[in-house]
Image (cartoon, rainbow, N blue to C red; front, side, top):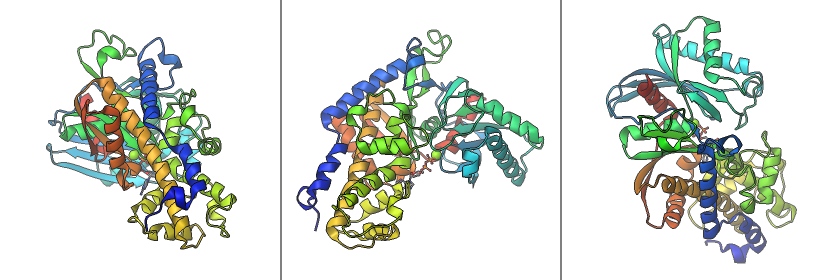
Length: 450
Ligand code: ADP
Ligand code: MG
């Protein structure tokens, strides 16, 4: 039978209320985010803005006519990838790719080692395809906060998502990669563009869907970009007189709230997760939304309820007390059980060392998961509604990538429901999974920029 949280586990129900965001608060968040975005765009406020709204120097959306052979690198997600993308026709795109694991040692070691490793992977990939001497154009998807000063020049601002390599912040990342390639001397490529995964996602979606105006990531991290009028992008030299009407702006939304403007919706569990993260007090919004953190938020709530004897009474395990052990994918699994069934929930708790078939407890676990994923989706809806209103568009598509959006069973529907609440029919929108923004999108940006 379906659970009634208020009746079946009232204490947990009360605790979960802390995560609820009312309609009025969602609207407040949209207002606050709009203000932060304007601060990021404007020259006089940009230096102290939290939501940086970096200009990407991508001013052309794909026409569908782009053709040719491009290399792409994807750094900043779970895996590092090298790709060879061949644009043959509007519908025929060949992608060859290989993933490489970035070890913890590399993630937290000197930047030089990281870039040497990237160059090594690129070199071995190119040799496999016999293209190491072809001097192919390369698009570098580098999904960390980056201040771009040109299409292929970007200054690293700060690491996020578990990376922390010395000697990179403040440097031009393209040059670091080019130097590493040159040090090897066995490879000829041209790095023609550096981009964020959001930009790649927008471009990849726009190739087949000319109305795409937003790129969104809800994966390990969370971020979005959108198409702004060049006349509003004050950080571009000569923005008033640019002959190109549009500019993709990488909002770096993950940092929204770092100045305290989201404190009114944050919970003690957010604080706990933030404190134990590698980047405390930073990426406030990202830590409420993205895959790197959702499972850990659930784990904190579960542990607190267990400590109070309100959940899995009499049971305990080492695993449930282990930081980061509860995966965000578990949330998707648990919420995928049909209503009234707790098969996957029981299996996952069993993996976590807690063997139980007490339905009330498993229902409570699912309720906690729903609470955390719903808040994530509500916040993402605020982001999308904000960007749609900022662009003043009446009809647009949103290209989306990331494991949370792709695999959570209700995320898409939650987005649609909450965006409708916020937009109240003022704009039409379509949410589309964007195929391989970091690879295909990088190739398209390389194509439109050479
Ligand atoms: P990224 O490129 O940012 O790593 P991905 O699209 O590869 O993003 O998504 C990977 C992230 O998505 C993982 O870090 C994890 O947090 C989350 N994820 C993976 N599988 C699932 C799932 N089944 N449900 C929800 N989130 C998931
Ligand atoms: Mg990715």
